[in-house]
Amino acid sequence: MATAVTTVRVPARGAAEVRGWGRRIAALSPVLAVVALLLVPGGGGAEGGTGGTGTVADAASGLLVVVCLVRLLRGGLRPLTRTAAVVLGLPVAGICLAAVTAHDPAAGLPGVARYLQVFVLVPAAVLLMVRDRRDFAVVAWALVAFALLQGSVGVVQYLTGTGASYQGADVRAVGTFGATDVMGMATVVAYGLVVATGLALGGPAGRARTAALVCAVLLVVPLVLSFSRGAWIATVLACGAQLLLGGVRRAVRVALAVGALGVVLVGGLGIGSSMVQERVASITRVAAAPDQSVTDRYTMWAAAGRMWRAEPLTGVGLKGFPAYRDSNASVALSSGSDTAGAGAGFRRQPLLSPHNMYLLVLSEQGLIGLLALAGSWLALLVGALRRRRAGAGCALVAGGLLIWQLVDFFYADIGGPSTVLMSVVFGLAAWWALVPEDEAAADAEGVPVAAVPAPAGRGPVGVGRA
Image 1: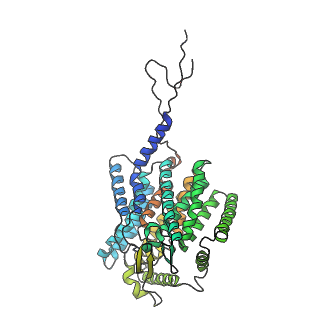
Image 2: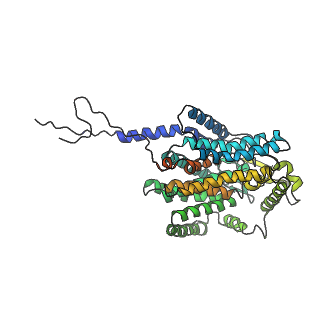
Image 3: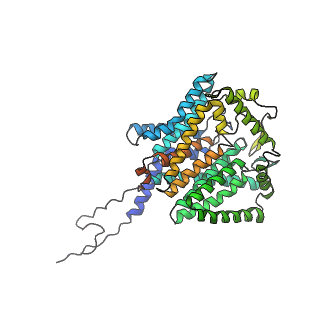
């Protein structure tokens, strides 16, 4: 007599996926902690890594490197490939050479540690900790979430007049970074906007893509209210490159939609209209009628050029820019920039870097150092864009972040608490650019869906009636 086998439906897949994502997040917790702990105040607004104390996030980045090293020694992580080791290790040559040849090698040791942290050790650790595209997505969405949080604080600061001082009013959105690091929130929000744009353009249709699009639109507001011209320019160019890589027709449609949104926000609703328009107009007046901040920047650029001409191959040494600034700068340079607001009193902040990463490296590390660092960054960008057919979402995120950073380096350099987030961004982009192609193309599941054993005395679960 035939025995009927009843199908037993076990709702285990959903629970298994939740547990899988939980384990995935736990494995990535050292990376995510670096992002989350940027909310803890600390350190200073030191420019160019020339001063100030470390932050809790910096300590977390050191712990990330240690955890990664332990897992690597225990065989829990795959080692770096030869290509990845060369690309990420390339800056070490210029950094160490500049430290050894400096007039005061001991003074440059903190600079050696900072450069190795930001451009070598933390990016390598992030690359090793990220195992597949889902890990990549977790870190990417963490950047978006952090940007939304900082951006929300910034918008509230603008609306309530509790931000950093700008044109005599405390309306500049700076998030939790304070008035001494006015670029911090702008950098974080720009990262989130670029990541969200890449996910929206390259991801499959669905709720995740819609969420990414909504996040990108929301992050435009705090970016505008940061009044950071360099971040604006870098974001427009990075997102424009992402649109073009995603398709010319779609790029045209999105450009028209963004233009219409800008007209509604600024022209219709009047969001920061007068200040924003004046700030945008100042971009075109950098040569004809520059303000004092632009004059200071040009003066420091010229000073950096004179330092490089004095020591063309190895530069004046790490942390050498402040010591040689006055002897190479003209009288047009002011004594510092004024900061106030966002819970802090008036402070005169010294200008200790040229606000241009390329010129900072050229002046302190010479041509050898610049070629090593810029060569590493260019290799990452080429590797990220070369694989855009293997995964549009990852490629657009990684490529967009690298383009944003390399453009922003024309207007900024390392310095301030937000710098450690830059190292995470480089590591995320490095994973896509440098891991073997089969790993980059794989889309590993969070938890393998194993067969559920059948209860005793019954047939296999999921088998239909016989």
